[in-house]
Image (cartoon, rainbow, N blue to C red; front, side, top):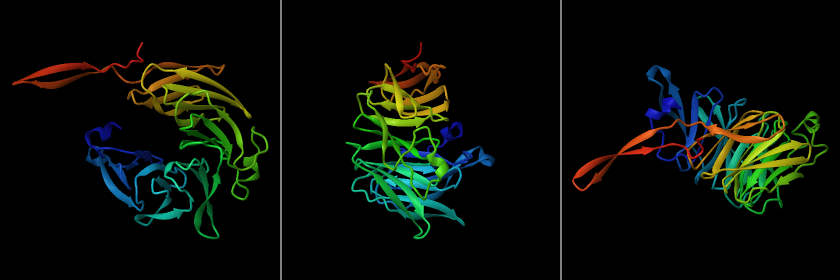
Length: 319
């Protein structure tokens, strides 16, 4: 993002996503639009807005860009979702039938990109897939499990298992196998025989709203964060889950990303990306803060004089 630093894309960005080769980025500037920027190396890596996607009526709260299909999916507070396909010189939207009565909050493509999941304020999760006969996207809904807003979703690498987080303080894992959409080979997993919407297990070791959730590359580990400044690592063996909660001394985290099976980066309200390391036994610990120690000089006006105030920007996590 060094090239973006000299060019402010928006005063406030609600959500964003990169394309497959990182040459383009799609953002929502805190409204009902998606702005797509493209890097121009010939002009000192200036980011130029090349497309504006306009179809939603309210704030766009989730966006994902499929690296295989090059399709963009968006979710909005207007309770709708659109799949955008690049045809010719324009992005054309296809409406998704979500059947929600509350805002759509988050959205993620499955690994094979034949489905995507939408978390919502209606306490349900929509698993959407394409119906060739009718030429539209439809959804099957997971109901009666969440007791509050579904804040985030994450797909297991096997394409038929989904993890969710919610403001009811729990993380849940579901089967999202859809007969006729997924192959028989997809159903042969370590979780055993599954049917759509079946809850495989839940974790409630975080006493606060739960947010960002991710699977490790092999799907043997799950991590999510809580609003009580904790991060939970869950070792998964079939339908058995072994959680480990790490309590932090700073402000809450918001999202996580596995770099490998034993390395994870998390970031949140402290604005300091943190690196966590796991050992061969599945035990995780905070390794270090990835930010550099900085000093910022601010000019403060006092009466008729202007004074220089030096502020240290060291992380509370630094040893």
